[in-house]
Amino acid sequence: MFSRVLIANRGEIALRILRACKELGIQTICVFSEEDREAPYLRLADRAVCIGPGPAGESYLKIDRIIAAAEVANVDAIHPGYGFLAENAQFADACRDSKIEFIGPDAQSMRLLGDKIAAKKLARKSKVPTIPWTEGAIEDDGDAIRWAAEVGYPVMVKAAAGGGGRGIRLVHNEATLRHSLLAARTEAQAAFKSADIYLEKAIEAARHVEVQIMGDRAGNVLHFGERDCSLQRRHQKLIEESPSPGLNSRTREELCKAAVRLARAASYHSAGTVEFLVDKRGRFYFLEMNTRIQVEHPVTEMVTGYDLLKWQLRAAAGETFSMRQRDIQPQGSAIECRINAEDPAHNFRPSPGLITQFYPPGGPGVRLDTCAYAGLNISPRYDSLIAKLIVHRPTRAEAITCMQRCLEEFIIEPVKTTIPLFREIFTHTRFLKGDIDTGFIERTW
Image (tube, one colour):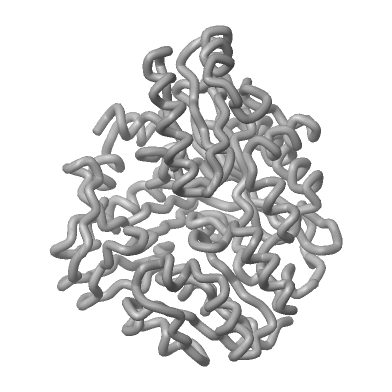
């Protein structure tokens, strides 16, 4: 096991990694920007190193500064968390060139799976169902328009690189497609330094279901069940749950096996998530793979009892899994709500500012991943996530009533948050029945 790990992230995920390291007897070095100098989790680290001013481009995204901090602190490994540099193959290479282990997959796997076009080709080769698509990047807009006419609208315009819902457009006609091609290229270039885009057939009223996998360096790949992430806005997840209320046992088994096949085909090790769309008839299609730990990993931890961060650290250190697939038996139902500093009543407008009141919920089966507190200033520079509220109960109905109670207890003021929206969702008839899809929130609210 590593003796010293640098955490190249901030906020609740930095605290989550720090706790996993502490329990494994690993010393921790946290980096921080000037804006995060007063973050309370920094005092829990064995050492904290400032890497620049507030803007992420001058601190958390500066590879050279993070590597320099790691070398000065003499660490064995760097954990990138999620976001920032977590899926940056150049960063993974820089770590290993400096004889520092990158806690994640190797750069080759990241490049292969991080490029959605290459990942789709690998999925097809691995006999994992894929959505009809243009079979490559769009070189000529005329070809894209002809392809869309042949397969029929609606279609999705997607960036080949990156994630987080950026560079994606849902298109219903040719006029909109012509405009969306340019807009998607521009956004993709700005966000991911690649203007490559492609088209795929839109699967209407689909569920977004993902499978948590983990691989070790001995070639073992395990899945830890699936999560339903259908409740989204602008292609960004708000609520996740496991098991998915829309899958039967056969589809669930086939979905998980397909995820493992893809990961093995990519010689994947570390934590990762294979994402799928599931249509009304229960047919599933590969969407993409995220080569990092996910925001919603606590949902899987609650139903399986496995600490995914610890196993990610163990796998990176070269340990072989002690468990087998038959040992992983999810129990009960878990649901997560992402508490964001956003105003749902005004199109999810960001709501940064000073938190003056912070009263978290509690009780049996309740988990809150956060580093927020009364007196914290929510910065407009970073992601709006304040907290992740997770509940675990024997049944979905019991998990819902538990979450309803927690949402009533949870007070964060005066910043606007997604809590009022969640209170409405958790009383909506269709949600209670599990009759949801990726367009549910936008249609209903």
